[in-house]
Image (cartoon, rainbow, N blue to C red; front, side):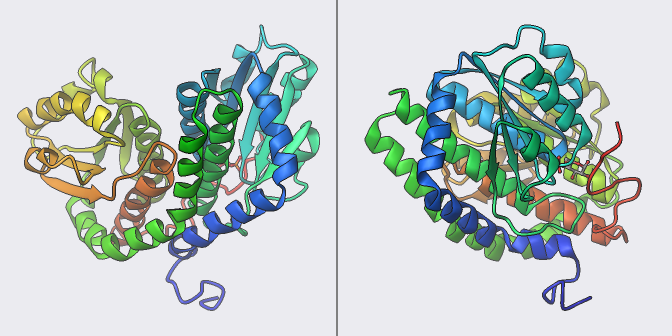
Length: 364
Ligand code: G6P
C-alpha cells in the first residue's frame, strides 16, 4: 500500500504533491484538443448568461471561474451549489449555458442540475476528471481535467486542475469577446504554464512551516476563514478542507460580512484565517483584520508578499509569491491544503478516511 502512495504517508499528501503534474497534464490535454476547446470557447462567448454549478470542492473551483468570467469576459454568471440549482433555473433557456463541474462525474445533485438545464433547453458543459462518467455523458459537451485518479476523499489535485482548465477557458472567452487584449491574454496563458514550477516552489518552501502552524490550531475548536473577491472561494475551500479531515468547525465568510454576526464569537485566541488574492483585496480587508485583532483573535494571513504591512498586522503570516487572478486559485490553495492535512494528522486522524464522508455521493 505504501508503494501505491508513492512513499507518502497518505494519498492526500501524495496528491497535494502531484499538483504540478496534474496542472501540466491538464494544460497539455487542452493544447492537444485546441480546435475543440476553441469551439467551446466560442459557444460560451455567445451565451446570454452562464450558470456554474457543482458540489463541495468542485463548486469552489466554479466560484473562482464565475468571478473570472464576470470580471474579464463581462458575462453575467451565477455560481450555485448543485443541490440548490433547481431553485434558480426558472428563467434558464436556450441562450444560456450551464457548466457542471464534478471531479467524479457522478455526483447526483450535479447530475440532476444538468438534467434540469437540458430540459429547459440550455447548453450543458460538463467538466470532469473521469472519462465517460455519467455527468459528461449526459451533457452536450464534455471537457476533462487530466489530474490522474484521485483517491483521497478530500479533493486536492482535481481542484487545481479544474481551476486551471476554467482559467484557460475564461482567458480565451475574454479574448474572443474582445474584453481582454491579445497581448494580455498571451501573458495570462503563459502564466498558467509557469504554475507547475510555482506550485512546486510553494510546496518546497512552505511544507515544514505549515506543519508547525498546524500545532497552533490543532487544539482549537473553531476557525473563521475570511476573504473578499477571489479570496472568498479560497477561504471556502480552506474551511471545507479543515472541517472534513481535521474535524475543526471552520466557517468561511465574506470578510466584509464578518462584522454582521460572526465577530460575536471571537474571543482571545479564536483563529481567523484571511486569504488575500490581490492588493485591491488587501486594501479592503485591512480593517477586517484589525476588527478581529482588537478582539484577541489569533490572526493568520495568506497573502502576496508585496503587501508588506500585512506582516505587522497579523500573528502568523504566510507570504506567497505574487500571482495574477488566473493563477492565484491554484497557488494560494496549497497552504490551505497543507494546513488541513497537518492539522488532521497532528490531531491523530486519518485524512484519507474522513468519517461520514464518501468520495462520490450518488444518493440524493
Ligand atoms: C463529496 C466529496 C468532496 C467533493 C464533492 C463533489 O462530497 O467528499 O470532496 O468535492 O463530493 O464531488 P465531485 O466528484 O462532484 O467533484
